Image 1 (cartoon, rainbow, N blue to C red):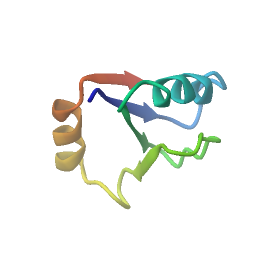
Image 2 (cartoon, rainbow, N blue to C red):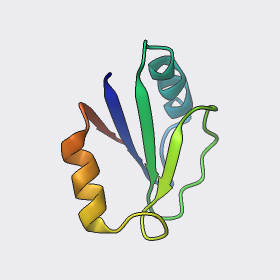
Image 3 (cartoon, helix red, strand yellow):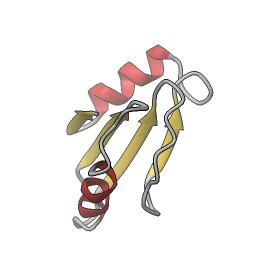
Image 4 (cartoon, one colour):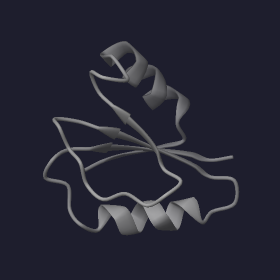
Length: 74
């Protein structure tokens, strides 16, 4: 099962939600979004959402990065 990790900032492009939706359609894909700097973009249903600071500290974020197959920064 591929794991996609997206690190999203406040100024991420609108195309982000489209990419996430396409990745969710892949068979057994896991899509995780980490919101940075107070980002709050519209996200498709099925995406696991975490906030840096509230849900994750930097050590846990680093663990997520190394556990993921694909890491995308926006």
